[in-house]
Image 1: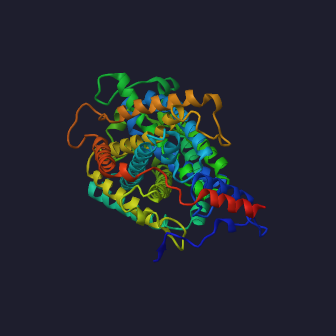
Image 2 (image 1 turned 45 degrees about the vertical axis):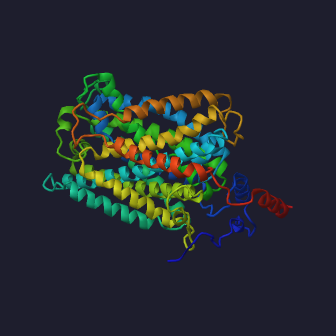
Length: 526
């Protein structure tokens, strides 16, 4: 298959159905030129499809199902309900601050571009470097954590279907994980139009599956748990003696579920009316996931008939016992496999998102082998090389699946990497960049600084929390390897910066002569 950096596609040739260039697309591309980049993708994502893309990565019914064990251990019923609700308040601040930046600067470069523009001139390149590497670390480990949980959904589903007769081990789980990665890479190499149209289908599946789960669990569990117990009963099974700290560990699930909403910024160059669509998709995606996630955990709290009994489950995902106990075998399997399919689609969306981040960072020559990863496929007009690159890196991270604490490590590394990249530009926005931002259609106004300050403080606290092991009893099989993943990337990125990149990396590199392009555009408009 032939690849080329320069594609034949002309974004200005897109018409509005009447044979004339779309005014919206012309405005999108003009804004992108002002940011320093030429348009290299087709703008196939509508507002609905962009919202669907954001929601698909957070896929609430999947995240709450695979992350059920955290609140189960960290406080039982109380942690399920309030361990979700409390973090959502602070994550909304992060999302709102990010949406403000995405509305002003809708480019696939996204977060590291925002950092470069908001930081002082002296710190611009370093801020961009830190943000880019943090985001890529989070993006890759998020793919792996999503797909690993998908593999666990499959192994648990098989055990449920066979009444526990077939229990697959870590080797089989890794084999399933590798197969998931491979098939997703093939699907994600498709053209933008195919990917965009698929998002509407994914949105329908998300809403149908999530509402079905909430309603069926609430209806079928009637009388199992009293309303008082469902909202207030606290049971600490983490091994930590401090109940407050144990409860805080339950925040891992919502923090993991509420990641990836920066995807709306990363596909901005493939989105129509991006300055409006990107911030709306971020806010709708986050708020929708928060509300549905809380309802899901309320339903799970009522359906958790006995915390000690569920903890004795032999399934890879203990929540499988809850499904069987409440819904019966047929109902449980029907809903379970729907969630599994949705989790697979979530992995596809995240692979697309991560590949766009790698493409954008490579476009500025910031990654080893950038000349390969920034190439756009001539036929699909998508960064196919970047798709396979992030898939390879994620598959390597998948070797952690042989550890009992695999999901803990991958989820923590994903959250730390992503949220550090989220708040770095927000930090500079409220400090050195207070007067630099040119407001887009979505703007926080006088609330920008207080909301941003809350976002930065919250993430600083969560990063520290996520580096801790989930239990006081730590061994080779239960260690939180997020520290290892983060440190490996940190030392590589730091060494690269100190010995090389600080002499040549200047941050985002414009790939057009902005003034000339703008003048040309103005001439055409006249």
